[in-house]
Image (tube, rainbow, N blue to C red; front, side, top):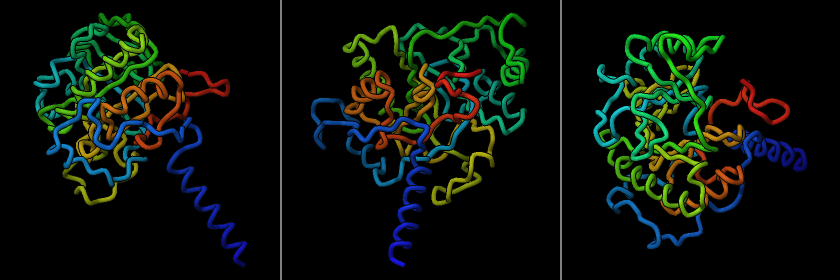
Length: 314
């Protein structure tokens, strides 16, 4: 009987591990940082803010899968209003409302992006992931047609309504939550991480391959009026359009999303990222295509995206 009991226990443990860390993602058991506990080599956020980031909260699956991410390059992260979804003047909000009007099963994130000195994307361009496409010419008047075209079955983009499209350069795009007026934790940790990533990218000679932008808040799962922070996070299907995440995310600062030409790496989220993690992330995740379990929060929905040959399918 003990043998059978142990067999079932082992099977349950394996199933739980698979559920927490899907086999489809190339995880590594390697340590995500080799720094001492109180590192003096890399810049750190102030101690009073560090105390507001709870290291005991589980990271794995603290977000739910989604299919698409729309980023609108407008304004700067230090000036974005606290809630972009209530600011009718922003293109981010206009596009977000158009997304909400579609089938909620699409599960799409809409956020703003801040180039923070980079010039790879222009002000007002809309960046689409996982497509890795930039669209120019989207405005309040044609936003609905743009969303319908991209999210529709035909996936039509450009050539109509004055829209211009181009493939984004590079191997990987990293988006860091830098939304200052939303929460000071990301408002301080985010820009620090952007600077550190860019230093690391330059040191490693990856300037033409990896780009780092600031991003408006994307960290939680549901609307604040629907759940308290003590409630269990529901399944993504309950709220198909994951727009302007508002709950729990800043507790995991610094938050980053990595979009990558490698489908297995594409759309993975990391939380509680510090400057000590930057170079290991660039080396192990961006270059080698391996995901750190210690930092992993979840990933872009992978169905209909990777074929049997391991290549991206659109």
